[in-house]
Amino acid sequence: MAVYTGSYAYIQWSPEATFNTAATNLRNHGGSGARSEQFGFEQRITGWSFTQNKIPLSQLNSVKVKTFAYGQTRGSLSLDFVMSSPWFLALIGMNDAATTGASAPFTHTFTLDCTTDNTAIRSFSTEIGQEAGGTDIVRTLTGGVINSASISTSVGELVKVSLDTNYANEAVTSTLDGCAAGISVCAHVPYTFAHGTITSTDLGLACAGQIQDFDVTFTQNADHIWGIGNSVAADKIRRLQEITGKIKVTNKTAAQLEKIYAQQKDTLGNSSCVSAVDTELINIVVEFSKDADTVCSATATSQIMQITLKGVALDDINVSIEPNEPIFQELNFQAREAVIVVKDKEQYPPAQ
Image 1 (cartoon, rainbow, N blue to C red):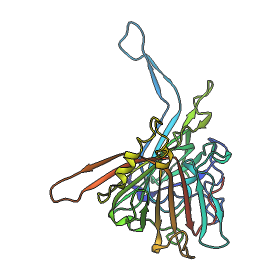
Image 2: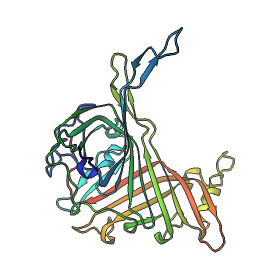
Image 3: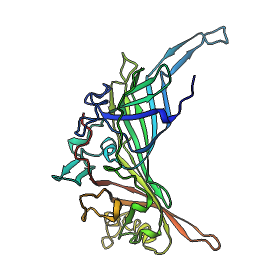
Image 4: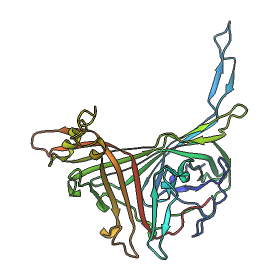
């Protein structure tokens, strides 16, 4: 029997209309919203586990395990891919995209706020097919929720996304999707570090050429809820939404250090003449763009993703100094809000 590789496998996902019920559009691949999607270019699974949480039972007068009981049904799936398609953003705690435009490029705006649109966590189904010779293996994962999503890049690298997900249950068949979801270079560009600009006038980051590394993680602290009477999760929850990250930049200005100093001004509220703590919060704008277009100068061929992090507070600044080497500083931060604007050739997101 032949040993098959990732060349004979596929991954596709679609939002669920009902939690832990396989998405009805998981095998639809039309141009409208009724379709499944790839997460991005060069999808890969970095970790995949499914368990019934076995409980070994022992007894007095014996050193052997007597039998086994089984607890919660649960799966976890970790994915990496090159950032290109924006649709995974709706699964990480952002609102449904507000889409404008009568023709390409269409503008999709994802926001993070407290409206009813994003108080409930979104679940999705994933189909993973593997050709295995005489008997193919197709596993359908349902009740999926994203715990965290990290977007990162550095000099010489692609813009990569890492997803940490859990799912409620799965089923297996042997019928592959004969026309699995694809991803078009015409509709989506695989972003690299060279497509990026990072600016923050508050931090003196006006020259993206001095930035070496960037990483931002959206964590919605998602989980499943179980109830007595069933080992499979009954529902899903989200907790505190956290946006954290870091920037590595050349050490050319004290602006970042001054922001750290300023945070102590009103810690105790002792003086009315100093600036309020909130005034020390900053904004960071990260933009990845094909052909050096911007959100404001987009053309019909534009493909752009702009991430605006608002209410950013610096955690700390770390500096290393070595003989004859550039001096860099690493800024760790946390943001309160985010707005992500995408210019794209696809008009409709994957629908439930």
